[in-house]
Length: 316
Image (cartoon, helix red, strand yellow):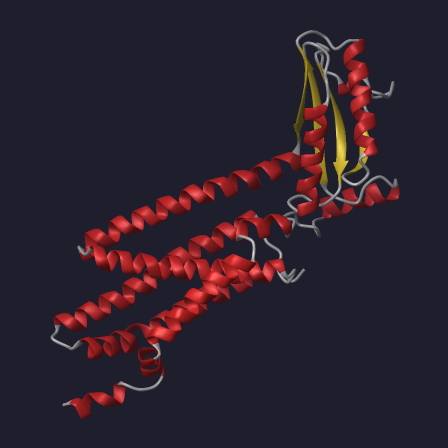
């Protein structure tokens, strides 16, 4: 009977079975090295963020062309600095506004152009609210929306506002599409941490309910976390080398896919293994049965996910 079953005990399945310990140690070493030498994926994402704006859209092309023709700006990141007072803005508020404009114009690294509406007699009335309690200035920032430079530019403008000294009863705010994009990215990073912990907790509960074994649940969670750490580390290394641009959404998608795929494939293997064991097979025979039963399914599913992700890569 042993000779009848041995033909299945060869090939890649046998290599993995015989070299199981070195393979596990190799994956653990990979995770340790990547996490020790490469910054975390979120950090790399901030350092190598790419713009999510469609740069070939007619509206953006036209806007940039206007900026280039007037020698004002070449990016699509715009911030609005809004002044709001408890009473109609007076001379003190206007002096404060003028000082803000001069400070913004002095930061040539992050600010490309300042639309000084309130400082121009022709546009002053249109930049102030009807009740006279609010006014704004439009600032064109360096970097396209979502890029690392654009996020740094938004932070620089906010720092200028925070370090300014408005007169009594007057407050200054930074708003607009550029700051909104930056806020969305930051909110996405913060929420992803919570979502990851909640997801792992839900998976743990599901596994303990289905398998009714703490050891099985713990083993599968360790495998999933190891796989997720390896995937995040490899992508972080590629991004850190400047070979791949990242965004908050791509980082979130990667983490979600890694957890989902790792959990599914672990359930496939463990479930098939348990079925074989319940049919009376020995441990090693059950391993080969599980491998040959779901190996091609995992390979096909993995290639499908990889192909879908590759299709999302922009040629630009």
